Image (cartoon, rainbow, N blue to C red; front, side, top):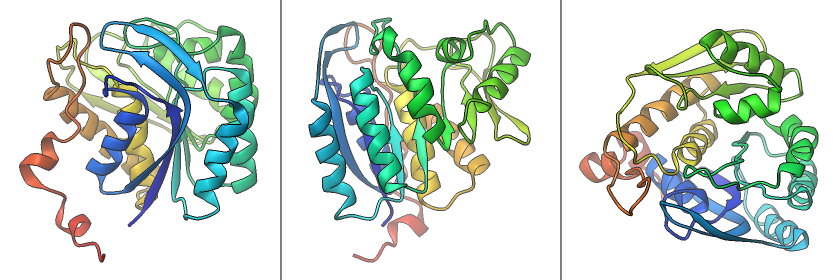
Length: 273
């Protein structure tokens, strides 16, 4: 069985962060592992508090996984401080995993900040160049590219500009735009579009975490980048379509809807013990 490691913050309400990542890994048929960088007291309505894990402990968690288990892909999510970013970057350079998918989480779905604004430059300098795939939403892409995004052409221009900063591929997600849900992928050579009908629901807590984790899972299983993004978008669209009305704010998506109905695809369920 392929393995994927998530490096991110927790979400005690279960819809985003480490919890969403591990659910996604299970639904995708890979073995999930985690390094917790921040403990976040949040729910569907607000972030109540954040307590960061010491950088040395982050490094030790990464050491514990990499020294013992082969890691086929890494997903990096919320990194709240510059110290946390430096710790993660150092170990990623040391261990050199084949696939690194970075979701540059800056703000929670409810609008609460999850990253120290002063740490954004550290993210750009130290984490972004290590990303094989970067998955910013439109506000994150605007911050990283230092430009406004008002159209699909702007999304493409931002993807190209962010790619020039060192990452190998960029998916600018269109969830914050109007019309259909259109994502733009630029891999350094060509631009590709992934479009689905927009689902009218407020229950989208954790969609960015889920999407990036699904990409990492598919890359770990051997899919090429384009196919990994397509499968991840299909998966997160399904999860949003069957989102759960849990909580008073933006409820979570349903990570296991398809799995509960149909089980894993045959080739994935026939894994030797």
